[in-house]
Each structure stands twice: as C-alpha cells, then as structure tokens.
Length: 315
Image (cartoon, rainbow, N blue to C red; front, side, top):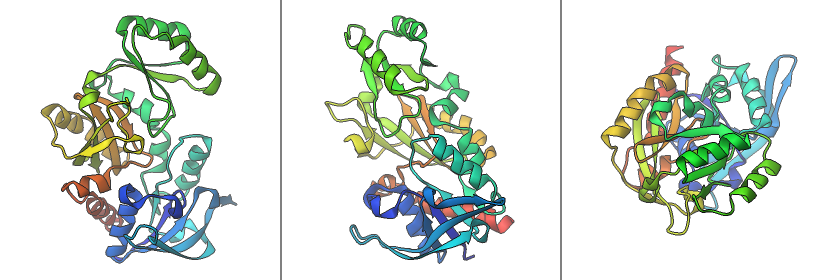
C-alpha cells in the first residue's frame, strides 16, 4: 500500500532531527514508499466548506543540516491525501484549536492522526484528570484562596501554566518559600487561564518517565532524569534520556487508560509518569520516539505506520 501523506508541522527547517519524533515518522513513511508533502499551519485555508493548504513535496534524509528537500508550493484540497499527520508543536492556543476544526472537515475520509476532534477535547493537563485515581493530588484553578488552601494542605507543591509546554514556567514552591506571593502575581498577570498546582513528587529526582502508547497499547518508554540544578526533566531543558523498563504500577496505568485512548482515535500518545503517578497525557505532538530507539528500544515509528496502514486498508 502506497499512501499520499501530508504532514502539518512547524517548518521542517526548524527541527532538530536527532530527537524529533515527527522526523522519525517521516523517515519510516518514506522508507515504506509513501509519498510525503509538507505544510505549516498558517498555510491552511477553509473556503466554501473545503479545506486547502499550500503544500510542498517532501523528501527527508537522516543527515543533520541537510535533512530535507522541498518542492514548489501548490494549493491542494486536503481530501486528496490518504493521511494527514497533525504534528505542529504546542502552544495549545486558539490557533491550534482552529486547525483542529479545519481538519475535522476532512476526517475520517482523510485519516488525520491524531483524531483532530479528540485532540481538541483533550488538553494535556486537563485530559489527564479523567483518571484522578492515577494522579498525584492536583488542583486546576486561578482562585488565590483555593491555591493557598491546597498549598497549606500539601505544603511542597509544583505550579505551572495550564497550557504551558516543554517545561516552561514550572516552579517548585517549598513550604518556607518566600517567593510564593510573587509567583502568584506573575502567574496572574501573565496567563489568563487557570494554573495547575500539584503535590511535589520527590521521585522526580529519579526521573520523569515518558511512556508511548500506540493505538492504546504500550509501545516503549524512556526515563528522563533532570539535571542536578533543575526541577524539569524535559530533554529540551537538559534532562538526560536513560533506558528503562516499566514498573507493575506503570503497566497498570497503561492498561487502565489504553482502551480510552483507542476509542478516541488517539493513535500516538505520550504519557508522563513520576513514581507510578500519572502527571500528563500528551496527544498534540508526543515526543520520545527517537530517544527510545537510540537507547535500544523498539521502533515505534514502524508500529505507528502499521496501525495507520491497517486503518486505511480497512476503509
């Protein structure tokens, strides 16, 4: 089966291919003989009920600094494609939400991965609250009294913006921290949405595990260990990727949420787990595929394309 595949992403010139999961998916698609096209979200258009984009034929190479070739741009109705990969990075803002409305017009006639309606309905730090029994104590609010009461109860907490990404603006607030009031002021003046406040998990010093699920089933994992002088374990913030195995508690988490993800058409999902506690479910543009493979883990990109090809064959 040879598929026509468009990828909606940040411009391919801007990515770092060594750790980019979208690039891993493109390499695998090309190796299977699928034809690739590239476009950025700003090239989308909805006219008279039809969704178009200015797309460019794409070839990829696993060579840093010379990793792509683009053809001339052409305006194309997206229903001409068999598959669209929805892979631009957050922030999950109104612009991102708008693109999901556009892509919902073509899905499932054109298979969009992940399902755009489900992506829109699953903001990562809210979606995870569908499973409170698997999480650390968590509050989502901007109400100062609610936040102070939560801090009084749990004392050592983490604060972060609800729609933040990549570890940006994540703060640990200890019981004796005199910066709490200033942080409240900063959050209030910077973000209009609520904030996420969670009980601090000391197990984060041992790593924040990124677990990948494909079509609702465990596919691979990498442990991200934070630098000694940083709370955040995100690899873009200096976290170190380490090979890992799942604990029984982590397997239970995967088994608990997997059917829920599959039912919603969320083919590629990354979850974050600290000390057997689920902290996020990432559905917009999950990362970790290349790190897992580099550390001797499974070829998750191949597994994703197996699922996509099976879905297309079934249609």
